[in-house]
Image (cartoon, rainbow, N blue to C red; front, side):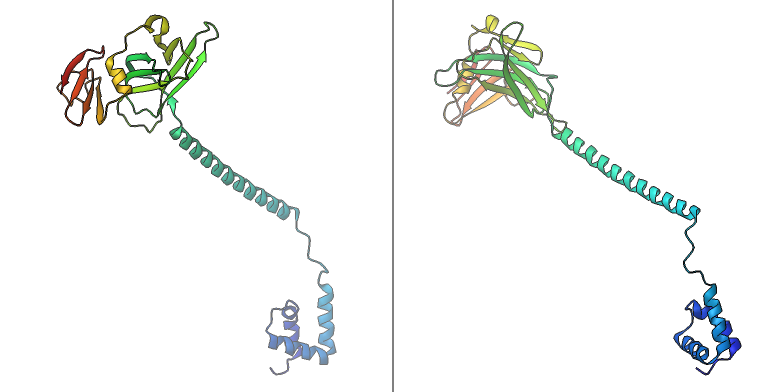
Length: 258
């Protein structure tokens, strides 16, 4: 670049000081300042007029910056709280779907018998229908503090996802010698030793607890299955060779084939 004249250099000095000129222009200005005392004094005067430090941030700017930081912090906390709440709700919902609850609604008991078998524990045989798939049966024994009676408590369990099918029977093995005085389904007394202790045991209960070889069971209580010619309720044991025995719930033989 050719040498610059003084008027041009003085016009360029503010830009030079702010470092917004090209490297070639900066070199030309510096070369001129070395040879021109007047322009150098002008340059030094402009430098002297510059503030030594940048002005402090105004209170308004500082307050605005602080406010924006608080807003961002609150937004972050809201998002974090929303995520935690969502996780808690989903976890609670999953737990609710998996947790069985007591539901004895619509349960019909057709018979309950205490069976004493020297070779096994004492057993209660419960014949019933339930309108929903049973996740399991809760059973426990406890002693009533007011009456002193030993209670076998039975409750049906289900989860919200259970499908509707039918359950027909269940057995409860008791610890040997731990005789109970009453059996409860929910808050309903369904068996007492005083009233039912001497009830005859139907043959089908013994046959069920000790099934014959290659035998299978069919229990029809409410007539919904309707896969035989016998009216419900009945209990049937049949064998692979075609033999079968059909009882009513009192233990009377309705049919026996060889």
